Amino acid sequence: TGHAVAGSMRLVMELHDPARFELALYVVKTDQAVAAALDPARAGLGWARLVDASAAHQHQLARWINEAGTHVVIDCNGQTGKESMLALAMRPALIQVHFLGFPSTLGAAYVDHIIGDRTVSPADLAGFYTEKLLVLPHTFQVTSHRYRQSHPWPDGRRAEWALRSAYLRAPE
Image 1: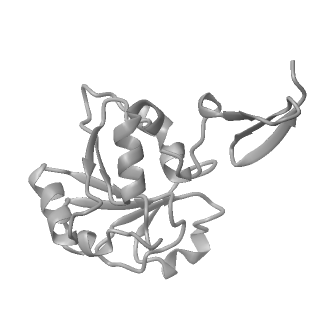
Image 2 (image 1 turned 180 degrees about the vertical axis):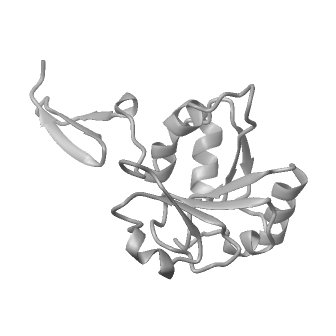
């Protein structure tokens, strides 16, 4: 979808081996659910199963995750306004991880791990986290040049962005 987190996760989802992992994407925001359903390729669903949970109550979302036999749930929303914190509090999966969308502790004992890096999750602050830190060696921010977007300007230049930076280039 057009959301930064969804766009960043495209490559991560594509790199999972469908012979070894079953991926389900529970989309809790209405606009993202609609966008993903209309254009699964752009949403980066690949072979992941889309579950529109935008109208679901939190207990229903937790039940769906649990009944699917989910071993690991990775929350990418955190406390960003349309979060799934109540569903996570019901412990629908054996292991619960937070990643990307809210790069700080959630302060919730029912979230086991947080994926970060040395900058957003410094080791000397580990005592302030309720989650166990899973620190990536370089950066927690996933992006890919494969999904750079380009849009024309009226004068023929193009605006391109990838890695959250914008560039202008002259027409070729």
